Image 1 (cartoon, rainbow, N blue to C red):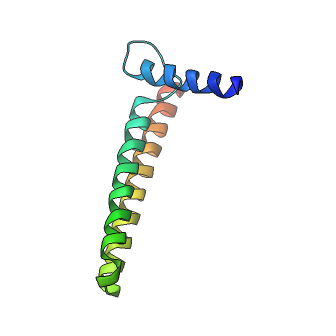
Image 2: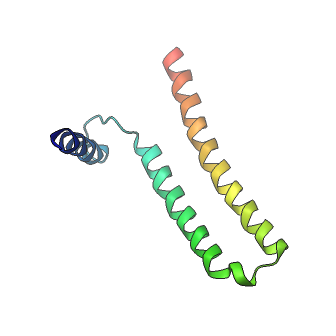
Length: 91
């Protein structure tokens, strides 16, 4: 149990460092993108659970399209950040 507490303490300490002037193990942009993605996903799943009985195939396909759009956008933003970091490191 002590290992778990140590890991939890490390994670919490690093999350606090994200918004301070210190360098952190986690990337602020990636954490914020992840939180936004989770919020969007929960909203979409909640909408699906509430409306699944009344949805036809068109509504469901629109819901799935929006899901894929959100996931693709988040992945594209993260990859764009990685490419920018790699270019800066090479120079």
